[in-house]
Structure formats: structure tokens, C-alpha cells
Length: 522
Image (cartoon, rainbow, N blue to C red; front, side, top):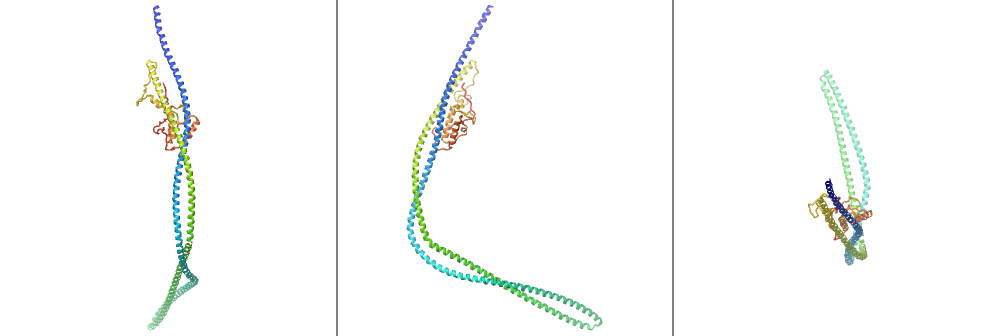
């Protein structure tokens, strides 16, 4: 029994050693946690200090960007206006000088020619006036002749009315005679046909009676029949001759009436032709009179123009003198304006010199800010790499001790085929993790993202076109957001051809994706 107790006591001792060995790693973990907390607090303090300095840098950059933008705009506009004004004034001055010289030369030549032309014009105008007087006498005689012709035409017009009245009377009388002739002819034809019908009926009756009588007498006496028939035939032949003679007389009367109608129609056509001829003559005389009147009017106008040419020449000379005086006054005004513009140009040059100095100072400031950001990026990446390496080795040691699982393989150098590299986390720090339209604190941004903000600010200050991704950058404070929006709206797309040396090309600037992974330090 005693041996068993001793054996049990010996087995209990190794169990106590195991408890002590477990308490040792727990103390180490607590020490490491405390160290990590101290480091985290230290890094938080450093981060707060850097954020405050970055906020100050950002405000200073914004103010300088606005000032630089305004100054560059003013300088560009002023230089452009000054160059345009000077070019315009120089061109105008040269043109005015050429014009003045030409006008002076032409004025001298015109004055020399004016005296010669004046004498020639006096001689020419005297000759022309004499010729015009003779022509006027001739035209006045022609005009008197035309007036005589007009009086004759008026008399003929009066006679024409009488002749037209006579013609109308003759036409009426001819119409009446023709109507009476037609009526008489119709009556005579009706009478002739009526008598002819009566004679034919009488002849038929007589023939019927004679036939009846002859038939009766033939029955009674056949000898006396031939004698009575002969007498009856003689009587009938005489009656027939009488009727034929009356028909011939009527035919002659109708022929004479037709001849009279033809002669009257001929007289009518002759009168109509005479009237038409007289009307054509009157129209031709009217045309000739109108032509002569227009010719007289043109000659009178030509005479007036010839008489008023010397006065027009004098008026032209007076106008030329007035124009030259006005051009001289305008030249003096332009010279005064040119002197004023030259003074303004000198002032603008001095202002441009001060703007260039301020621009160089601002560029130097941005050089320093960008260099500091790059140094911070390098330091933070180096620290992240060392801490990640230490954490990875610590986890490997714990995994080999059997306390934790083995971590995934991680590379600490650049490799194109690596799926879990430290450099991928560094690249992810430059990715944009915030949603579109959300407010972003500048202190929440990584150094890589701050570098992107600075480069985008350089691009805006140099007038480059904003990319779509940079427009989604929103800051937390409402006042800061309003200031940045006003700056972005005020910046023109193409400010000037000058650019900062520190500006990277648009293709080099890193893009800001929508979804970015967080950086975890193990």
C-alpha cells in the first residue's frame, strides 16, 4: 500500500511543471499586447499630428491655388488684351499714316490739277453754253413746229368728231336703205310668187275649161276645134310672155339693188380705212411729240448739270479738306490712346513679374509638400513591411510550437506570380475605399491617397481636364467641401500653356478604384 502511494505522488509532480510552463507564455502574450497597445497609442499620436499638419498644408494649398488661378487668369487676360490692343493700334496707326500720306499727296496733286482744270472747264463750258444756246434755239423752233402740229391735231380731232358723226349717220342710212331694200325685195318676191301661183291656177283652170269645152265641141263640131284651140294657145303664149317680162324686170331691179349695196359696202370700208389711217397718224404724232418732250427735258437737265459742275467741284474740295482735318484730329486721339496703352502695358509687365515670382514660390512649396508626402509613404511602407515580417515570423513560431495554425505563405519581395504579397497590401493602400458621394475625412486617407489628392490638385492648377474618378473625391467638413467645389468650378479647363515642373502626366497619375481592401497589420 505504501508503494502505491509513493508512485502516485511521483506522478503528480510532472503535472505541476506543466502548469508552470503554461503560465509563462501567457505572461509573454500580455507583455506583447501591452507593447502593441503602447505602439498603437504612439502611432495614433503621430497620426493626429500629421493629420493636423496635413489639414494646415491643405488649407494653405487651397488658398495658394485660388490665388495662383486668379493671378494666372488675370495675367493671361491682361497679356492677351495688351497684345491684341498693341497689334490693333499699330495696324491702325500704320494704316492711318499711309492714309494721311496718300491724302496729302492726292490733295497736292488735286490742287495742282484743279487750277489747270478750272481754266479748261471755263473755256469748255463757255463753248458748251454757246452750243447749248444754239441747240436751244433749234429745239425751240422744233418745239414751235410741234405746237403747230398739235394745234392741227386738235383741229383734226374736232373734225374727226364731225366725220365720225357723218359716218354714223351714213351707216344708219345705209342700214335703213338695206333694210327697206330687203323688205321691198321680200314683198316683190312674195307678190311674184303669189301672182305666179294665181296665173298657174288660172292657166290650169283655163286648160281644164278648154279641154272640157274642146271635148264638148269636139263632140259637136270637129271642124271648129282646131281654130278655137289655136286662139287659146295664142292667148296663153301672150300671157306667158307678159309674166316672163315681169320676172326679168324684177330680176334687173334686184341686180341694181345688189350693186348699190356693194357700192355702199365699198364706201363703208373706205371710210373705215381712212379713219384707221388717221388714228395711226395721230398715234405716231403723239409718240413723236412725247419723244421730243423727253429730249427737251434731257437737254434741259444736261444744261443744268453743265452749269452746276464747277459748284460740285468746289464742294468736293471743301469735303476733302474737312476729311483731312478730321483724320488729323483722329490721328492725334489715336496717338494719345496709344501712349496710354503703352503705360498700361508697362504696368501689366510689372504685375506679370510679381505673379511669376509668386508662382515660383508656390511651386517650391508644392515641391516640398510632395517630397514630404513621398518620404512619409516610403517610411510607412518600410515600417509596415518590417512589422508584417515580424508578425509573420511570430505566427510561424507559434505554429511550430503547436499553439496556432500555420499561416498562408506570404512573400516580402515583388513577384508577378505571388498571390499574397506585402506589396499588394501597399498597392491596396492607394485604392479608394469610400463610396461615391460619401463624406471623407482627410485624416482617414492614407499617404498614397493624399499623394493622389496633391497630384490631382496640381492637374487642376495647371488647367488639365479632370478625370471622372477625381470628381468623386468629397471631403468631410461641409465648409471644406464648399471651398473645394468653388475652387473646382472656378478652374478653367485650359488656363494657360504653362505647367508646373512637379506635375506628373495624366497617364502616370494613379487611378482611384471604387472598392479597396483595408490594410491589416498582424
